Image (cartoon, rainbow, N blue to C red):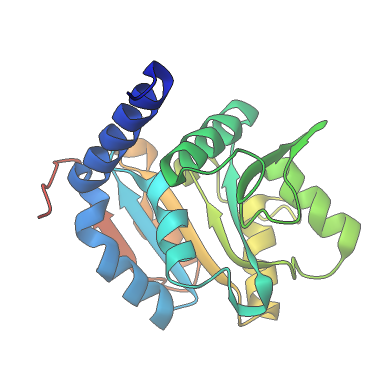
Length: 212
């Protein structure tokens, strides 16, 4: 007879599987991967709740972007709490222990290991890595800047947009995925596209799809 804990775990796994089948971004998985393969920089614009933060890194991992040269995917969040919550949700979704394949790194709290391939970090930690190593973020094959609508396009050398744009121009093998939520006048994917040299835009609606 199954234990109560195993029953709870199974129910959680079933709910996560159902969520993956109904969130809007699932419908755009192929388009996203094909666009990332063709272009160095891709802008993804979608309403809150469509699955951008948790699913895009998993799609890229499944597509092999963490295999070539054992590269990692950096998922850059604007806040410490967002990095922790996202990493926790993705590790649960993948059925792995937090801090192993999926982890987070924020100021004074590094929950990663040598096995970590999906790494959620803050803007400040990305800048610190770049300053500390001076290796053009060589350990990353993809950098995803999440919640881009919460930043501003600035010319500051240490601004996250300026940093990833500079690194991408020096490293043609690096892929950038810039993700923002549609929230009226506060988000403008066209401006981001112009800033990143006319990068293509993928728009994801909030409405749910049930994929068979």
